[in-house]
Image 1: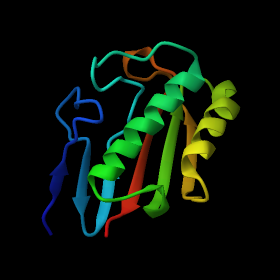
Image 2 (image 1 turned 135 degrees about the vertical axis):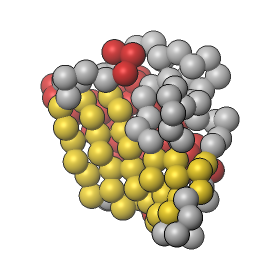
Image 3 (image 1 turned 120 degrees about the horizontal axis):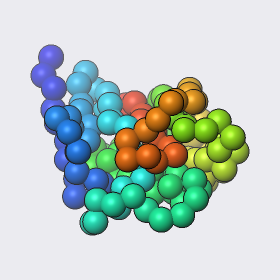
Length: 127
């Protein structure tokens, strides 16, 4: 089974030795997206809601590049620097998902790259 590596200019470049997403066995696996503006590669200004908005926009771009939408997403994992941000992130997340309801885990972590407050990754069915 081969692995296909995906890249789109509409999401931030990988900041390490990884891909924005891979496709294998009919599934898309995204890298965790943090709130980087893909044009400037800088963390967006604002609170956790603004950061979550950028993360969801980045993930939407990666999904679109693979020919997917949120309707094909089977699982997401949300990493939060502070679980007190759960409600604000959930509000932004819900807005982007529409009627989709993938399985989800939300985890509080000790830290995230570049000191951001939220990171999200997902798994989707391709095709």
